[in-house]
Each structure stands twice: as structure tokens, then as C-alpha cells.
Length: 299
Image (cartoon, rainbow, N blue to C red):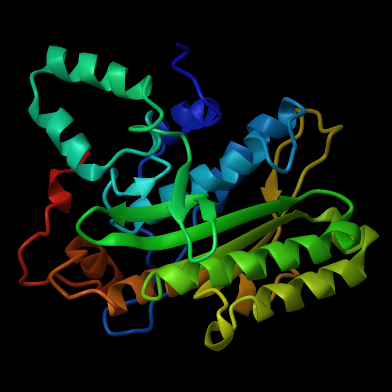
């Protein structure tokens, strides 16, 4: 069996990118999050350069890989954030801890077997919703806590106005489906569009901003947080198409930074303080006199 999947092209970039400190605020100030937009551009440049801008292919996987990396920057464990940075992309944390404790030769053989068993180490995280099973693009979960983050991502690079109503309907249904079964989990929706929408279909961009805001109507079954990102590239560039993040026209209240901050804040607010200690320490910019919760055993 090939040891590659749709995320494999991004592995080397993620390996070379150390998770930097993401918070910009001083202790006692409201949290200010700084996403690594340069990394997002590097990841998306790969499928764009290869001509793979399908909204459900490797372009979309690049978005998922980036968001998972952002949550690892926040301090969540390497094995509780899915997709993982290495295969298998979805692996119960306790199995990962076991592999780390086994002799190297035994661990490698078992890891290989797990990769050949999609039921144990799948590429996609699927969860049971209230009405139907749902593939979740980015997930934070452990068996002793259950799902804590359920994040859906969508990309749109053309035909903006034509396809926007379908994206809206799908997203609203998914929000109700997930929140109906996991009312305490942080649920999110991240929408990435090509910035040609500003030039070609400005009306569709205004509708997009309105959609992203209305999707987080928590009181009516919407998402905990939503975010919008625009990216652009020039197919005729001298160095090939290089993807750049363009947030100049994206309102502050729907930008990716506020979405990540809101999702992390929700997860911490509904969890006892003895859990996610490394995440709390980074976000609060202080050391906490609390024992670890086992995350320090990971990766």
C-alpha cells in the first residue's frame, strides 16, 4: 500500500515549520491571535502550481492542514488535533501514546499495520451527528472528552454567486446536525475564496460576508464561530503561481484570527481548568500552578 494520501504533499513544509507563538497580547489584555498566513500561502501554492485547484481536492486539504497546524500552535496536542501532521491522519491519542512507549521495531510494525486499516487510522474524521454522519475537516477529540472542536471548511475559486446558495444551505444544515448532538463542542465554519470575487462578482462578496455572519447565529443552531479568507495568485507569474492571503477587504469580525480565537475561547470556557493547561498558559500569557492533563505525553 502507498504511504501517501492527499495530505502527503504538505508534510515536508509542515515538518520544516516550527509552531511559533501565536498570541500577540500582553498578560491581562484581551486575546489577540496572529495566524501564520505565510504558511497558508505556501501550502496552497503547491496544488495551484500543479493545476489542482479543485474545491474538494488537494487545494481543500491544504486549508485543513493549515488550520490543524494553527491549533497545534495554540498548544493542543499533536495527536488530538486531526488531521495529524503525519500518517495516519486520524489516530486515537491513546493509541499514539502506546506507539511511543513500545520498542521502536514493534512500534514501526504496528504503525504500518494501522495505516493499512482505515477503520483504525482513517484519513478523514467522521462523526455521528443528530441526523446523519458528517465528515469533519478539522477535529480535536479524545475518547475521555469526546469531540471538542468540529470545524468544516469550504473553498470557492470561481462561479461565486451561482454556488453560494448551496454552500449556505449545506453549512446551515451541518451546524444544526453537529450542535444537536454535541451542544458543548466548539463548532466552526471556515470559508476561503479566491480574491477575483472582488473584481468579477462584488455583489457575491457582500453576500458571502453576510452569510458568514449569519451562520454563527448560535441561538438558532448556528456555529460557535465562522471565518472568511481571501487568497489570490497570478498564473502567469515569473516564478509560477504563488498564493498570497488578501484580507484588505475582509471585515475584522469575520477574519480567520477572530474565528480561531473564538473557538479556542469556547473550548476553554466549557472545560475544567485542569484540562488544556498548555493552551490556557499560552493564551493567558502566564504559568498556571496546575498539573498537566496528559497532553505532555504527545509528539
